[in-house]
Length: 470
Image: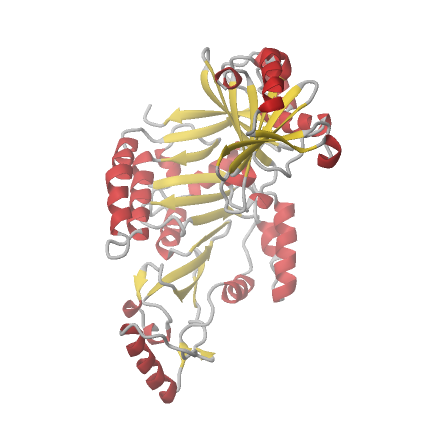
């Protein structure tokens, strides 16, 4: 086993039903393991833990599939072809043919090698953006994979596989940093496929009878998404530059239709009395059958509109137990179905659009557009082409607050104490790092011209981190 694991190999991992990387395949070249292969062949003959699972014909592949029992309820499976040994985690996984294997391997080919054994000594980890973007990759399909390479000579290098690279202009990227308020924990300029976004807008627009197409046609890529320690992970600020000014009437209609929903349920006097009796039984530990449920609900809270010479904005209070504000701070508290609420806000100027479930972030963005609040670009040094900017100090605070909110002391005391003991010291260490910006380049300083041309042909772009304190 030690000899097996010491050989060069390619490992593929796939997302399981639970969102984790549950399934995998380990591929090793037989030319490097001929002695090991002979040993395996002898073991298979009389080892009770190894048995033939399927013949090549039954498996629909080019080799027989064997089962290796490694525990009471744990098994691995492997196949041996003329050139490679395949070890995998699920019996229904098939040994890939040459065409499919080449497709897989193209994702992990280093620009400093041709993908064959001349790349020996370089370790690569490639992660699909489908896994990293939590299901939203269809909005920016050109960002395919993220790769990390390691070698003794160069240390760690990062690359992004950017298909159909349109090379977002420095001016367009710089606009995002000019629009975003300073103090962001993390801010990303995301290259959005506007054609894909237009298709989605058409579907939603047709179903809801809204004119979303005209809004999408005005948006310019990239979009900005920024998180702030003063807010929450689930309430980022989304901002975009536009081609001209959006129609206020259309924006009002879209906002009113898509933001918010029915609020508190309406009960009759009899239902209210019955619900009180049922709650009393529940508090005493008794089981309640046919609990009272409201049949009618109070409407969504009215949208507030503000139109001025400098900008237009629309806001709506939406009740949620995750909201920023306590309901008793709202004049519409009796209408709400929760003890907390968001003040969701959309705003537009002559050439920008801002949106967030946290109205304070939109207010800051408006203030930036009016030169009343510092922009993120004010704290950057020649980073107009940076696709990502983050502050370790602010990000650590955001993560810490999110952990505390998720684990209330009254309900999750053990997990909370564990997080405080183990996670918080690591976050304090993170604060020691300077603010950083990430560049997407066509050329890595460590690449020669040959490697650069090969990298570009494979549509890989090198990533470089810049210390903003220097």
